[in-house]
Every structure is written in structure tokens, then in C-alpha cells.
Length: 436
Ligand SMILES: Cc1cc2nc3c(=O)[nH]c(=O)nc-3n(C[C@H](O)[C@H](O)[C@H](O)COP(=O)(O)OP(=O)(O)OC[C@H]3O[C@@H](n4cnc5c(N)ncnc54)[C@H](O)[C@@H]3O)c2cc1C
Image 1: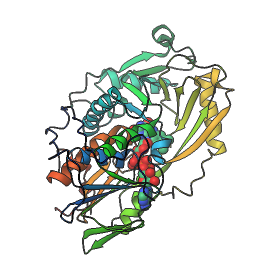
Image 2 (image 1 turned 90 degrees about the vertical axis):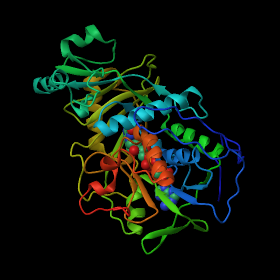
Image 3 (image 1 turned 90 degrees about the horizontal axis):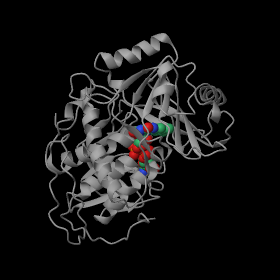
């Protein structure tokens, strides 16, 4: 079955969306050769993108703005119906220098999208509050600010981002400096407030914004169409098998937690693992009519944030990070939050936001987060010529715009990009790409 994203016409008329110049990625975005209607011909290059989550959608969008060649996106389900739909979708400035610059590109593009939206992802610009309940924890938060920062806490020393707003607030000062009535500050020793944080309320709509724009620029979307095989001839990609066989010049694998299996099918064992990401959605009886920063206990694995006036999300981030060999089949994962994690979530809510303690659970789900050993995504060329990868270490909502841009640079202009060393699979021992 072939389908087209419902928000847009199925017209093949090409529309140019100008991309604003960004400081983080240096070159100008080259424009497409023509804007006229295109029909595939034998001489056309065909790019296949597997996955229409935020990654595949961004890649399709970026390619579509710069080439008139054929671009086909396959998704085994609906667009953005997998990890992207389950995301908490925070956007904020932390991470290493590479991620920082990628996020600047993403923020700029999202500003453009939100200024002229076709879908409506909604954004809540709420800030983030890391709260420490021990004296040691509070001292570490304060230290991160006074010494110039820490990549995980929102300041990156020596990269030019040291000036970002990150404020340490002693626990007793919290009720005097921030208007957050639901926050119980009695056990908080100290907190780090990071105002440059927010989240998309409807992350799937964000991916659909990319889909709508790519569709308008002539990309062909095939939903409910699993890619069953990627064909190679020696060490080159030659085709994909979906509802039919298609000869292709390049495949971009943007299949979220399914990336591992697809890459394996062409002989690449990605250095990528999975963690489970459970979410509980509480619906307080009285609506919360003001925004609330996301509350992230420094010593604990839980996060609390208001998603809408009538919904609070409680998340869990496993404390053990990258677990070698840990892998889940996304289709086999139980979508119910386990009882012990649910209890821990309830305890965190009772401790920090007691007014939500008795709020009933309105929804719950479990996503599969992808992880890499060093916390950066794996982007671009691989050892198999024509097979590129777009795999995140979580953070896909924030990094997908730049990933789309990087893939387009590599495929269309053979430019490894300034991020090659930080993002290429070749940074891991025993991995090469076809260019090395
Ligand atoms: C609970 C949770 C909270 C998160 N919070 C944040 C956050 O606050 N900020 C942030 O930036 N990131 C966050 N993330 C991470 C972010 O959501 C992901 O990095 C991002 O959504 C991944 O997008 P993707 O397109 O790579 O994968 P997906 O959204 O999973 O898309 C992959 C697509 O590939 C398709 N597919 C797979 N196999 C095939 C095949 N054989 N043929 C055709 N199609 C196929 C699937 O159907 C799917 O639609 C969170 C994730 C979770 C689960």
C-alpha cells in the first residue's frame, strides 16, 4: 500500500523552503536545480530512506530541498508512530561541543517551522530544574556552575557556550526565586535552573512537519510498507525489497531501534544498544494552568514534567547507561510500566510534587531508546557503499535536523562534514566506511 501524509496534497509540485543560514554548520545550503514537476527516469538517482520517524522525515526533507532526484521513504507503519511518538521531546542545550552545534542548527530550523507550521507540534518553553536532595549533590551542582560547567549540566567549558544561562539556587532560596507552587522544596538542598529548555507536546507532529514539507517537495512516502530486505552486490547497495523490488543507489537506515537488525542484514554490527524508556501519564484533577519546569532529581532516575494543562509525564532513565549487548525487540516490548518502576515514579511524585500524588494514571507506555557507547549519534557512511546510518543515542528530537543536513551533505556533495570525526561509525575501533 502506498500512502501520502494526509495534511498535504499529493501534488508533485515542488516548493522551495528556504533554509536560514546557520552558524553551526558552515556551508550554505545549495538550492535545488529546478522546481518543475519531476518524473523518475532511468538515469535518475534513487535514494531510499527506511523509517519515517523524526530521523527519516528530516533526512527526506533535507534531501528534498536540494535535489530533484527520486527519494522514497518507507515506513512499516504510520509516520512517526514508533519511538518519536513515545518521546518526551525535551529540547535543551547540554552535551558536548558537537551536540551543541547540532542543536543550534535544529533550534534554528524549528524556529522556521514553528513560524509557518503545517503540523502543530506545540512547544512549551518551560526550563529544567535539576534538584539535589543531598549536600554532596547540591555541592556538585553548584560546582558545575562556578567552575564553568559540565556537558551534562548545560555548560560546556572552553567551547564558547560557557555563557549559557545556568543558575545554581540553594534549596532554601527556591520558594523566593521561582514561582513553582507544585514543587515541595523541603527536601531540596540545591538546584540547577536551566531556562533554555523546553519540550514539544506532540513530537509525532514535529516529524509530520518534516513529512509534510518533504511531501510538498516531491518525496514519495510509502507507509504500511516494511522494507523486507536491503540488497547488495558485493559491498554496494543495489536495491530494496518492500511491496515490490526497487533498484536504488543509496539506502539511509533511519529505523530507530530497528536499525540494529537492518544493519546486520548487510553485515554491519552497529555499536548500539537499547534501553527501555517507561513513561507514566498522570492526569491531575485540577488543570495546571501555568507552565512548570521539568523537574529532574539529581540523585534519582525519575523526571517529572507537565505535558499539558491536564497531564503530567513521569519518566525513568536507567542509571546504568550504556549496557553492552542489551537489545530489545521493539515489537515484543510490553507497553506497561513495571510495578517497581511505577512505585518509584509515585514516590518521586510524592516527594517533589505532592499535589499530583493521587492523580490517576491516564496512560502509560514503554519506548525503546537507542544508545551508543560515547553518547553521540552514529551518522553517515558505513563500510557498505550506498548504505548510510542515522542512529541516535537518545536526543533524536533535538539532533534530527542536523542529522538530516549531514546525510544530505554526504549523499549529495560527498562532503563528510565538519562533524565526521565525532559522528562517523569509524570513530569506533574496528569500524570503517567505504571511503577509508
Ligand atoms: C520515553 C522517551 C523519551 C525521550 N525523550 C527525549 C527527549 O526528551 N529529547 C530528545 O531529543 N529525544 C528523546 N527521546 C529520544 C527520541 O525520541 C528518539 O531519539 C527519536 O524519536 C528516534 O527517532 P527515529 O526516527 O530514529 O526512530 P523512530 O521514531 O523509532 O522511527 C523509526 C521508524 O522506522 C520504521 N521502521 C523500522 N523498521 C522498518 C522497516 N524494516 N521498514 C520500514 N520501516 C521501518 C518504524 O516503523 C519507525 O516509524 C526519547 C525517547 C523515548 C522513548
